[in-house]
Image (cartoon, rainbow, N blue to C red; front, side):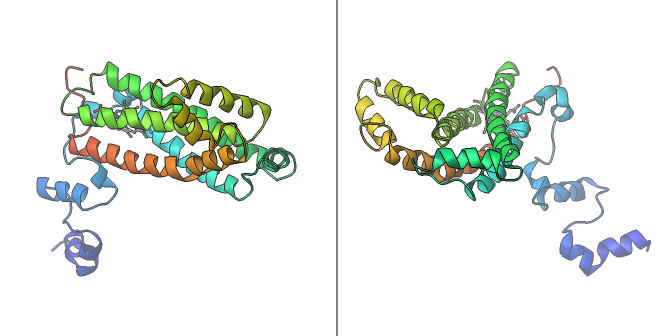
Length: 240
Ligand code: HEM
């Protein structure tokens, strides 16, 4: 018995890797299905779908921006106070007094712009390659909800610095929402927590921004990636 065979048949090896050396179709499939990271991929994919030129890596880039925003946002939470008295001075001192504070804020701000941009480009790529067609129509709908949530995260984050730009952007944004025919006034009231922009609005936008929207994004991104896997990988065919 060769050394390689002895190692791959040993109990220690088998306790980590639940398959033999991947030199046959069965073990190659088991490599994919028994590893939590590889498991995200289907056992077989079209070679074309692995080419960068097919997907342009835009979905992965959107995912990476989301993860980096989660990290930079968590660090920002150590400093930021969601109070109409303190939020603005808080942001100013973060940028001027805290070491790397400006970098941290810019990472979060530019990361947010990048995520919106890559999500829109990713959607355009999916449309261009016809990947929204059955059996992937459900994942397209999940994607549309993800895009709305991504825009929602940007919008709610915009209010948090409590500067003039933020204040008036939210005033205008929620006024637009109030023109919704049936429930406009109620939607505006729910968003602002009262008739005008104030502490209740900041508290609500903060809760939406740091907890509710990211939780739904994380849940739906997991569903989205699981669907990519269950739909047999990316839609690429040889004649695309
Ligand atoms: C938070 C936003 C999103 C993330 C993190 C995300 C992530 C991904 C990833 C990683 C993939 C596989 C690799 C790739 O295509 O680059 C993918 C595929 C896909 N996404 Fe998204 N996506 C998002 C938004 C959207 C949007 C807005 C749509 C469309 C409305 C969409 C529809 C699809 C579809 C249909 C596929 C399968 C593509 C194919 O089979 O070629 N996604 N997504």
